[in-house]
Image 1: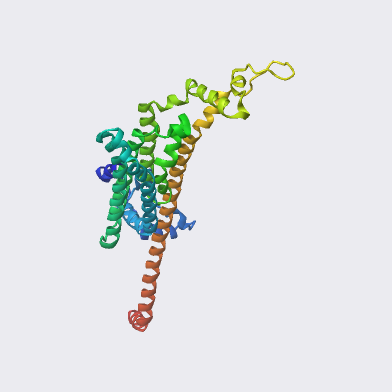
Image 2: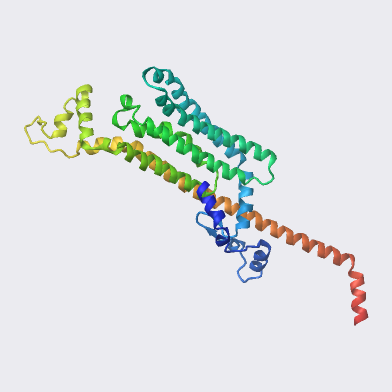
Length: 344
């Protein structure tokens, strides 16, 4: 949440467009004709939270306290998947790269993953310390957002360097398979961290911009789904898979039917194969969309729970005050009655 947080701090006075006092709002709502505490709800900016910035600070403090186990689990899953995935592979291939390449190639293949791991481990260490020592734990949000953002950038560099390393195993679509199962898999923990929607939206925007726009365009990865790239795949399938030995003739429309009728190609082969190749990319888009939707729903539910908690606290305070007034009245009611008779 690095950039949105900076914007919210810079525009704090402009974003602070409401002063919401729960005790006053509850009292005013209960005196109305249609009594419903559901109407007691502070206004919310789309990405920046409550319009009452002091209330937003209080909400984030409460959210961080309630999300401790989710944050620790998210860090743990991400670190584990990076450690035993990209990091392990990079270290295992380091000797091979040193033998056939120079140290600069080795650094480009090893350092991005190590930096991603370092950022997340540093973020986890800070969060543990903050939960133990800090009274104001909002720093956990800022550090977590920054740690994941830096990790996304580092993973993006690693993907840019080695996006074609799996071509021998998965063919021309290996970059999308490698992206969804290898590079973006550690970020799946963002779906359950229970962070503010603004943070999730910013991180998902960074993922989309880096992995689906910048790197594919710079590396020319979208050209791997063109007709010229698909034709060799059709030829290879025809030669290596016995069940599809006539696939080339079928796709070219020159396959002879047994009864001598003209063959009509109903389903273009290129379209079918292109859909298969693009499917991992579609999974990535669905995951990113789902992460944003889940982030919005989780943020909305967290704010509702926080609002209900504040309403119940305001009602409790009013009940306590009313009980004290009744107790004082019962203790001094004889004096009050005597005073009334004297004035009467």
